[in-house]
Image 1 (cartoon, rainbow, N blue to C red):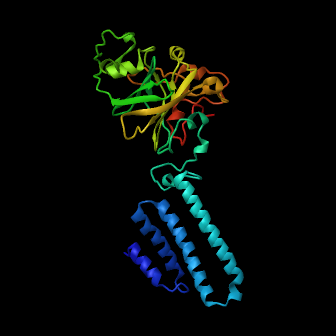
Image 2 (image 1 turned 90 degrees about the vertical axis):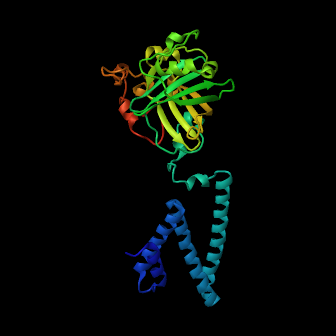
Image 3 (image 1 turned 45 degrees about the vertical axis):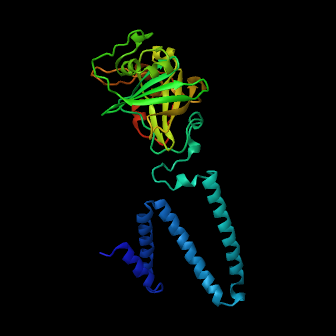
Length: 343
């Protein structure tokens, strides 16, 4: 079997007038070779397009050098001005894209580990806190998540089939946050002693284990103000951090099971580190133009009859005036952007 490089060599030697098909195959082989070298077909395809333009220009310049000027006068002028404008525009856009990320960041466009996503479509309440571009689609874990409110922040847990990821998030006076992450070392069935901690009766299970054994976590987040509740969080990994959408933030909503205010949190550099800074904002249900209470993410998650089983909240099923009830099943489907309202 001929290798791509051998096909390309044969195409170069071929007579274009008699064997055009082989020349086309050679062009395809060029894309394959470039792609194998740079490991990016975005770069390979762009390079091949520029190669074609260069071949045409070389051909025209060769013809112009041997022909009479009056025959190619108009074509030469058009080609000259087009070439100048093309090169100037391309150089300007590459310069602004590299240094100012306009009209698009060059360093991000050539990456293959990010989504080809137009950030303009992102809801305004998320656009104000994210950094970079998304690396994967937004998802809601099938087992949901847990949250407990504290004086100055939250403790979150993301339930995964093989592990539980715990996040301790503290609000700073400046409006930013700092966060820590750990995997649970709590032993099921054994409650951690927590003598002398205010409201320690509200703490249970993994949150109790981490809060009661880590003095720094206690100092930064203050005392607990609610019990843990289960909810449907949304997660999305970005180039500059982890986006967490729809975190309950009002104690009254946790008591009733129907949230009035949700927080959106961006954990900076969460892919590389287990602690760091971040940003957050809060949104109120009454500030949306859609029917937010037709979406499962605005309700707590009741436990089913089987251990660990989650059910659709009965309040959601009884909500009046919904064109469509968006249960947790709709949020399990991975989407390009996270949203608190799917209407």
